[in-house]
Image (cartoon, rainbow, N blue to C red; front, side):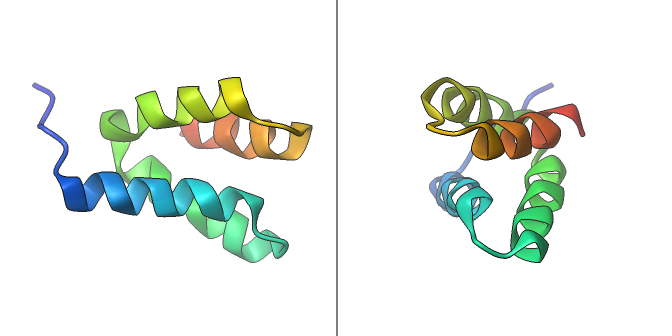
Amino acid sequence: MTQKTTTKEKDTIASLIARLDDPQNENRHHAVRALAEHGDRAVKPLVLTLAAAKDADHRWYAAIALRK
């Protein structure tokens, strides 16, 4: 059963997705791991991120988060 995503969790997921563009690899890797912990609730925002990504790096990190 999928749990309803709270506003706080939506904000957290959005913040983590924004960190996929961070210039430091360590911060991007942390964001990927944290997004994976949100499970199904992060899928739709990550798919939308993939569709709107302006560069391959952002798409790659979003795809890795989806895979986990």
